[in-house]
Image (cartoon, rainbow, N blue to C red; front, side):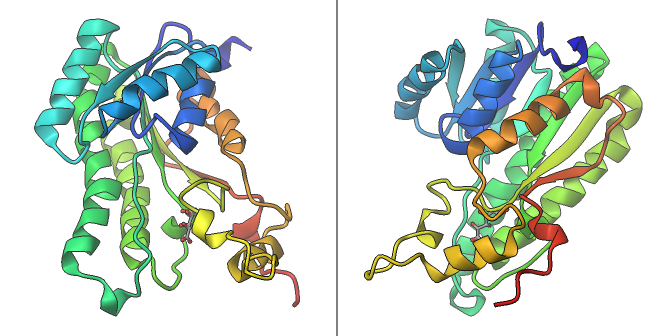
Length: 263
Ligand code: GCO
């Protein structure tokens, strides 16, 4: 199944030193890509390289604030110098602030928009010129359930992830003719540090109410794991998806299709 091979391709995963980004980066490496990961913290490079190596992937770490266009351009140039220009960009870096909207400062709202929406714009803008020159490219935006649904306390995150869905469609529209495919992955509820507060055991040892709610809303009856995202990411990074563009692939255990179990 050569069409799923990433041999000869350079991948950049933003926020790729841990959690979902790390799992996807390892998967792209195991499919043959040369993996570069970005982290906003210099001290995460060493631990990131070690985590990839432990999984059998030799990855290259680059520190840059993905909301800073100059820093991103410098990182993309350094990658090109070291291993070649980026063929596959995974816009994974993201933050969430769970605050009731009227208690949220404009500064905090803007910070979430900067990291979760403007940074994917900046990073995509930085890699597209080389993709145009080479005549191919893959951009994968890590969207969210919140690209489709809202919920209390995540107004900034939902606004950003909804925007990221439309940025995905727009990159498809603007560059599909140049053989650049831009798609999204919409993780469902995945057991990561980011969702840990939603799964914390209660004082009496019972499951967190939100944990029970998600289990009742997910046909799979479980939270996803970061490994559940790897196959979809390899598919969207590979030639197997060359005629797939502007789509958001929800990896959610069926939650978006399901009204939920009667309590
Ligand atoms: C939340 C969660 C979700 C998930 C994920 C779902 O607070 O509802 O953090 O946003 O993280 O984005 O796709």
